[in-house]
Image (cartoon, rainbow, N blue to C red):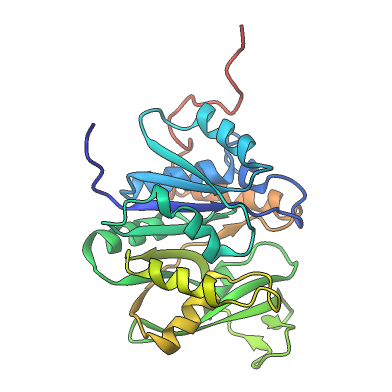
Length: 293
């Protein structure tokens, strides 16, 4: 077997998608019906990621695994890990630990956000060349789809280095710009605010800190611990370096069922201007299962 030298990608697909009302990781946003997770994998492979670990929950995991077996290229290393306790994205990454080669860096992405091929290229290049952790930073006005409220991790950046990250809730567009109705200041956010969309690059040294965060977290007070909160706390205590990779890519997310039509249109526009290929993996691929004799 040929050794895998490129970074790994952990795709976080264990969410229950209560606001979407279905398996939104498979939401058909591609021109030929490809799911979000299909386009994610296509971008990751193009960016040099060698293997993918998909973190699923016990309920929808079999459906996602079956979909991948039908539609993804054969010969690629894809592993599934089950997050048994759905207590946030830090624990989701740790669910993938046993499937990762921790002698090399790894990326982390959501399964319901399409980040753009350029953003993935930047992430892949950084992990191949730099010993530092990183975060791909999106502009707020290019990280919202639809008009319903969402959460976004707002980033403080100095000289390209992440200094703090604060989770803002109930972020939505207004006639004047963007507001966050969460009681924090400032209430109004600039369209150019750098935000995290959970597209991270981690060195293996991050894993012990993740374990410690889970061990010390009081889940009776807060039921989940998210990557943005974890990194924000770590920046104050251990002060690791996180390079911020700024991108003008549009992050196309599917949070609510109403987002689907807009997401489909945005993907078609990317194809028309040459930002992504027409098919996720190969021309003539299909999103229907093979015939059963």
